[in-house]
Image (cartoon, rainbow, N blue to C red):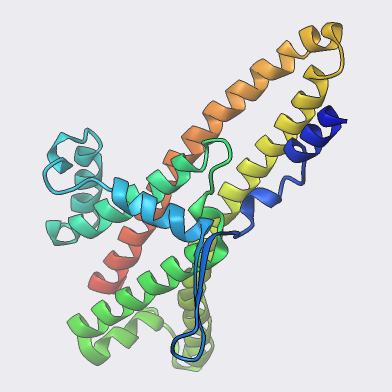
Length: 244
């Protein structure tokens, strides 16, 4: 009986790991009614921010040279380096902490990823307007376009530009959710195999080695998605600066 109860607690839906749950709540009869709740999303968001490298350790990070080179190559100015560097490490630490069993992956919340990408696109647009003023809108009219096609192309370019606010966040969200869901399904299957019999448990060592390789792959995906996200942000900033 106890074994069945324990099994039910461990083996559950692979999508449960992405649910936002309340960790701590406080209800107070002030200002009419005040409800303060700490969720797993909020807790791990703060945890990731606390792990961000500070200005004293930034020079000790080996990855700093790569980020610096990317910014210089894409933008040509180091003024954007602190933002890009902090953004990269926020996403990277959020992705990596999500690989710890029973933790929460901040980047599997579509509210976080879409909110982040939408905020970035808004900031990039404001930057472009600040630098180029009304000339910024020439970005939506490709050079050499016949006058008759201008309205259609402006519509297409506008939709394509606004789609960045969603594609940037959805790409990160989809990759992290897909990887974590796969690992959850495989870990549940392996748990059932190891719990069946000694012979089956021994044979399960083969797929278990594959499972360990997939964990390594997921760690690599966490790094790659962080790099791709920041690389695309650099590209968007470059477009706003140079109107390409």
